[in-house]
Image (cartoon, rainbow, N blue to C red):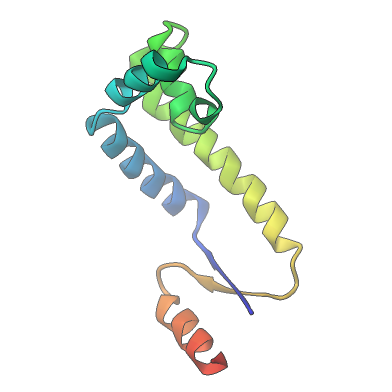
Length: 112
């Protein structure tokens, strides 16, 4: 059984911005520098969203003032690709992630 949760793009962007701001405040650049020192900037996990942009920032290829927006942009691109992929699956029953979360839970509980 498959359930999907969706949000309006503007709301999703807002949540991604909040999350990204928190990651940066919590020390994303410091953590990334530590990982680069241990494993090198080419270490595959540092190619993931968030780390990849932080690496560019630490290498002087991205201004620190642009870091958060670049991470948000990359995340939103990934979200769009994911939605395109999942929309093809006709077995997914979709619910709004904020206004229908309880209905999604009820749907799942009724199936068990």
